Picture 1: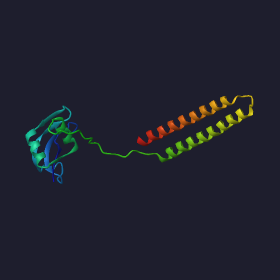
Picture 2: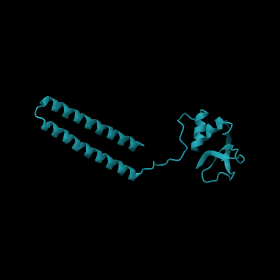
Picture 3: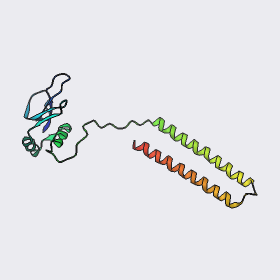
Length: 162
């Protein structure tokens, strides 16, 4: 299988590359390439490319590497989006920290529950208070817990996506 990729030809600390068509199994320094299509100097951001030859090789089924694909997109040889050439790593998940945060949330909810019970007992202890006021307090407490639950679920979703 043929592939279009870069072959480094520059000196130490002065990289420059050839854009070559080569067999996928050959090493980058073997100099056994099928065709030289151009050159790329990343320090000067200089790209020299034989566009017609590149289109011809692509029509024959040659697959470009990620960096060469991005160069071809930049030179408008290909009509596609650029590709991220960096390796794909999975995010590091700290299970201990997630478990500790979950325990803290549960403890906070348990602490909030007795505080709500105490407020309802205090309102029961005062018989002079009108019933409408206790309903308003209960509604406000329910609203507070609903907003706390909504914000905690939003935070969990953000952590999962990160």
